[in-house]
Length: 427
Image 1 (cartoon, one colour):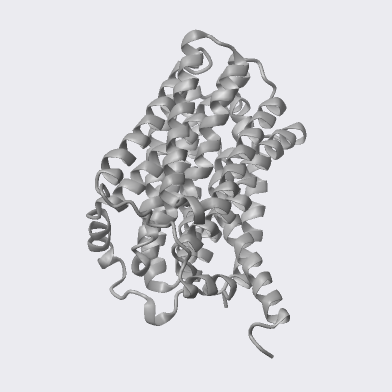
Image 2 (image 1 turned 120 degrees about the vertical axis):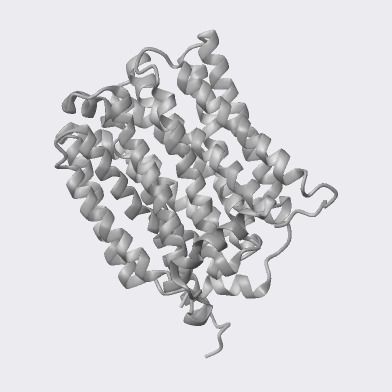
């Protein structure tokens, strides 16, 4: 039967769909790790007898684990293939999640959350590396947009599910649910995710080569610009995640269920922006869409700051937050495609640095959003505004200036046939 027959085409479509769902679920593990228990943060604070800032360190610890874990899992996947580090990471996440539910105090929980983050990092970085194994060019930008469609459902449903779980269980039950979900993903990945890095393309030398490879990548000014711009915009969203439960529930009086609905609406905006990006990237170009997303993040953050300073009210605050969060849907797929475009031979390491910047910056700065606890929204507003502006400045200074005079967008043309064909044939 011809490879171009309808049956072969159907099999290729089914394989592509399966790959998108699995990779999207792996990327979603990061947002799930923070968003699912966000509605329970006030209860967790009271239950463990901790302060607001100490409780928010459980988010920070997970983010730092997600950052550091990618620096390990990415290079390991370049040397050992994608499957083995992925399965080990998911197993670690599952065990750590169960132990989180048994934590006797906030400091034990902080440590376990860091371990959980390290395990979850494997899914994020390896999913991005698999996309680069299979695609490049505009095809990669479109594929990353598809991942947002799947992974973006995590922040939509996670806080809703968390809020509903709190009706029948405690915050400990949420961690048990995360562990069960991770175990299911481990099983699905073991059965349904093929190895995408052939033995002949793997890098020898193990972890000894990590330093030189990272140095080589970071010496690329454009790559570093994409990494930092993406990281600052992503960190602004995490500052919102960290600070908004207290601002919206304690200051503005929303219930956990109402807060979950607001959170889900913002996440839907992110998903919608990502899908618009995937549909028009071949005409507009990834760099143009990235610029638009970074501008939206900065404008939304500044609007939130203006609302808080002028006490303009809840409706205006929600509008500013929506613009800021939705804009990230333009940033993530295009920054990833552009950053990995010229580094296919070290896709795991490049994806590790991309993800590391997201979670390191987010983990380091997210606690600032809750510096005033439930007394003031100003720390969150200042943090999201500053990070949004920083992302746009980095893009302007490191990327636009270095490509001055080059009017062609790096990803404005149709992907090469080989890249397109690899997407539909993941076996």
